[in-house]
Image (cartoon, rainbow, N blue to C red):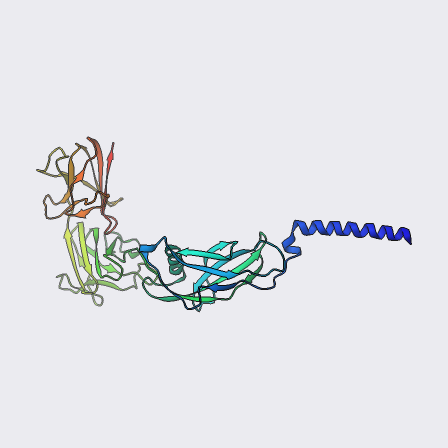
Length: 353
């Protein structure tokens, strides 16, 4: 019996040693057990947040929660999720991950997540937020927190747009050039488009896509700049490059043809007396010229006249209608590009060859 006791004691020690090492290698799976999920405590459910582009990098809010309980000393990971209120997180938006008990969002981060979840810019809407805890490397033993609902008013810095499909591009709204409004909620659209013979205007759907079946406008049949959205006619044009203006509230439009663009100024070989014609490239939707310039000044103007010209007030690389003369940095041979393809964000480049 004494010898048996010694063997039993040795065997038990071996079992204890193996068991200890097994637990050490994977403590989370062997020892830890979920006893209670994290609990969101801040912000309070019902909090309202109005986000702002002017404060994009400022903290909008900080989530704080109580630790999840796994009945063990183990590292816990937390994943934050957001969803449009009432959707039961059917399509959750990832809001960030951390090993802490808090997570801060800047205005921009929360705005991006809210828009992705389905909120509309400048319209208050409810977003549900929850935290999911887990342990180990495989997101094991997940526990889900309580859900809080926060009322959020997001923003957008993207200008609203309408498309201009026509026979200049195969009547395909999805790939058509666009016009942009001056700000969100405005109805004054403008932009430059190469036209052939007929075109129309198409609004985006709720997801921002352009397609037939959306609201669209054409001429009322008088061809005097009046738009209608029912029983409309295609708007006529002669081939050329146009500056289009559309007001979808007052239902008016205008089309001014500016097909000839040139470079003029004291920095050009012809001075301020005449233009140096630029060439249009339909593939890039830009005008360009390769030319010798002196370290002086230039501007862009249309149709060999001063009624329509662009400079650069503030020397920021963005064109302003009637803006300041553009300084040429040094004498040399340049490739100059005039780019009207992005509505209301007209630009140019001077590249020394």
